[in-house]
Length: 466
Image (cartoon, rainbow, N blue to C red; front, side):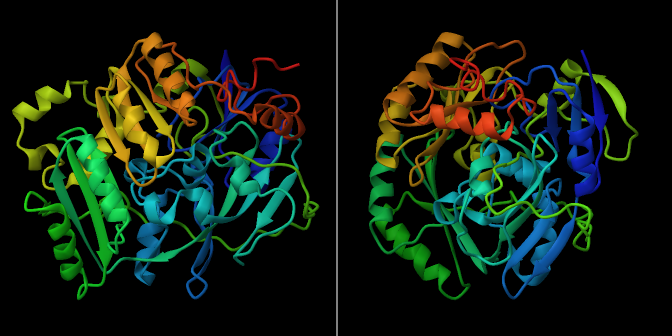
C-alpha cells in the first residue's frame, strides 16, 4: 500500500490536508521516534511537518515562546540562547533534531526532568487540528489553568493517535550559568541509597541518574559560577572520595552544531476564515514524530510505500550493536565508557539502544524502581532515581519483553517499546491501564473513525473495542 506525502507549511495547510484526505493519516517529523510504541498501520496519507517550522512569538520578559510543531528543539534553543533562555528539556533525541511536536507526542524527556519535568509541564498552549478539520486551541502565553480539556496534557504521549499538533506555546527557563557533574562508580543498590540521601538533603540536584555502563551514579549540579564550587564540594563530602567531577560539560543534548541554521520567524497567522473553537472544544492532537518519516520538506507531493517510509524514518545505522555490560566494563576505562569525558553522552547512548535489542521506557514510583530493574533481564539501564523513569535494553525475545511489561505493571507502572530490531513482533505496550475505558472514549469522541496514527496505541485502542 502506498501513502500520499503532504508537506504543509502553515496551519491552514495542515487543516486542508486533514480535510482533503478521508482515510487513515500519519504525522511525521524528524523521524527520531518513528519506530517507538505500536507499529504504524496502513495509511492513505503522511503529513510531513518539517516545513511547519519556526518561531511565531517570543516574549523574553514573560519567558514564553510559541513555535510551529515541526521546529527542531535544538534549533529553537540555539535561537533562545541569545536571550539567556532555553526550553529546559534535555532528551537525547534533541541532539538528533527531534521536533517540538514530536517530543510532545511521544512524552519524551531527559535527566533534567527531575527539576523541570517533561513537555507536559513546559507546554502552556497548543493549537490542534482534529479529524474533522476543526482547529482547537488551548492555553496561550499567559501561564494559568483553564476550564475544559487540557489539550496539551491530553495529547502528551498520545503518539499521534488523537489529532495533529500544529503550534505549541512553551514556558522558558534561564540558562544555567554553570554546571558540573559528579560521577560515582557504584552498583544500582548503592546508587539508590546515595540518591535518597541527596534528595533528602539541601543539595538540589538538577539530574540524578544511574547508568549500567560503566555502573555509576551521575549527579548534575547547576547554579552560579560563584556558588557552584562549594555546592560540588559539599556533595563530594556526602558521596565520598570515589566521587569525581567530570571534565566535559554536563550535557550536550540541546547544543546545536555551530553551522546549524537558526529557526525561521513567522508572524501570527490570520484566521479570519477559521473561527476560534468553543472553549470546550474536544480535540487534542498529536505531533510530528508519530508516524513515518517523509521526504524533504520542499519536495512535491509524492507516493511512497509505507514500509519503506518506516525504514527511512530512523537511521538505525547510527546505533551500535549490543554488547554485554560486563564486556564493556572490562575493556574500556570508566571515563571513556561514560562518554569520552562527558558522562551524559554515555547516558544518551544507552537511551538510544542498539540494533539488536528491544528497548523499553518504563515509569514507576521512584522508590520501586531499583526493585523493578533488578527483576528485569536487562542488558543495559539508564535510570532516573529521582523521577522513576528508566530506559532498559532487553533481549529481542517477545516472551522477555512481555515479562518485563508484566513486572512493571505489577509495580503500578507503565512501559512502552522505544526501539526494536527489524522484524521484532513483541508487545509494544504493557497491560492496559485502569483508565483504558476513558482513553477509548476520548479517542472515539475526537477521532471517531480512527483516522490518526492507526496502530500506535494498539492493542489498547483495539482490544475490546466495540
